[in-house]
Image 1: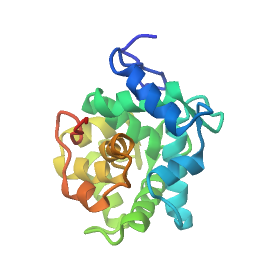
Image 2: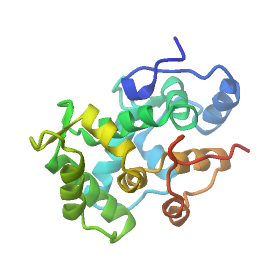
Image 3: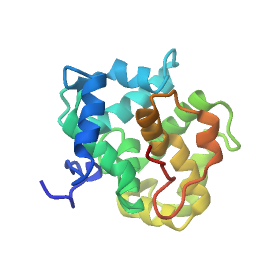
Image 4: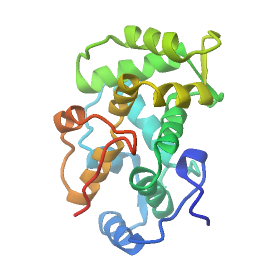
Length: 209
């Protein structure tokens, strides 16, 4: 399996270093070699969610469950780690696009984007912009042909050029904070995640201990 492939493209990429360390970490937490959706939510401290927030986290889990068997195995786990630690901003944005494209049509419509940010509001509380305001702002800025749908190209190119939108998308699910939880065995610090904006090099930095 080549290192050029990634989870954002629906492929598994295995880092050439530190794989054994991650394997030990994963197997200590999941002796069966499989992580369930319930374990994923427990790890991130995401219990007692309302319907919209719960659906959002289910979608996140499904993007990591690449073979759609209902579990995250070690190869899928290491692909997720690779996405967080090594991939460039374009690959991360491809992952977010896949997350937002709920019906798998290859484009994001207004309802899909609105649903995502209604779920984000349910998870994090009231935001500066309402989900409706944010959805309209995104389409106004990056829907180049004004057809009411965002293609992958429009999404990636538009967000790369707009740091404010990029930061909001980053906060919709903080990949770097997930890795901090895995490394440190702690519950995620949502306030810390919100206070640290993404950077052009990689949507937030993770310190490996």
